[in-house]
Amino acid sequence: MGDILVLKRPKHFDLDKIFDCGQAFRFEKDGDGVWEGVAFGRVLRVSQDEGHVYLNCTKDEYNDIWKRYLGLDTDYDLVNTDIKNHFENEVITKAMESGDGIRILRQDPWETLCSFIISQNNNIPRIKSLINAVCKSYGEEFEYGGKKYYAFPTPEALLAAGEDGLKALKTGFRAGYLISAAQHCTNGMDLCKIRDEYTYEQGLAELCTIKGVGPKVASCTLLFALDKTSAFPIDVWIKKTIDKYFDGRLDTSSLGEYAGIAQQYLFYYERNL
Image (cartoon, rainbow, N blue to C red; front, side, top):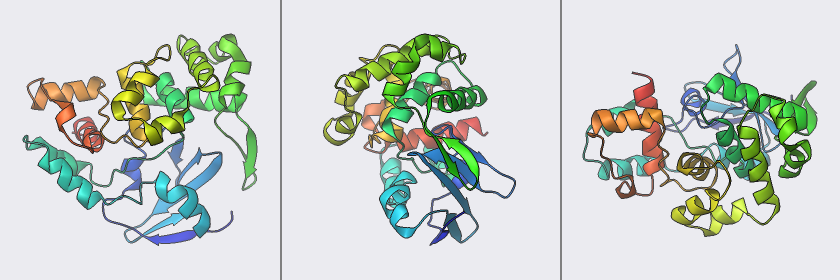
């Protein structure tokens, strides 16, 4: 299965929480405690014990891809201090304790956009099933360790599939939204430019020009793929949390540059009570 890189496990790093907080949909944990999934057209197998993290990659691959992907280049002591300083409500302390170990993944922007389009009005098992079907039908096949895997389809591959081809996979109304996203991304929308040059507000406005993409899907894309950690997606769980602990009023624009990480702590806390 190739090289295994062993790292000292850092503080505030827990794979189970990272892959079970609703930010990524192509990873599953096997009976040996290894999380396996496909990202950036590669298979990542990663596991942990009390002191170490184990990855199926070379040191160069780790430095080029997986360090950034797993958020291992971010000081979460500084992040957590900043979050505490922006909250008056003490529930954030409990949420941070509950969610300690969550790190925001930096995922492929195109795959993340499509994944959260697919996530609309869906539960996580069905989201995973639909994404796997789209990848198997229209993604590039490759082999690793004697098994077949599939990369996420390119915008061009989805356009070639067409709305009918995607609907055949039971994506429903989301098929048209995926086609709209593919059209935008082949006709000038540059997701990497949004990441590197746009403010959060500019990125939100740009993504919302795609049919079927509203503030929630756009904010998830900005948070989980485009380095906009001030993005604060509001779904049913977060609305419930705001109603329950903040009397229905939380000025998310006042929560600082790590508001999105605070959102993940709150989401995980409320979902796991």
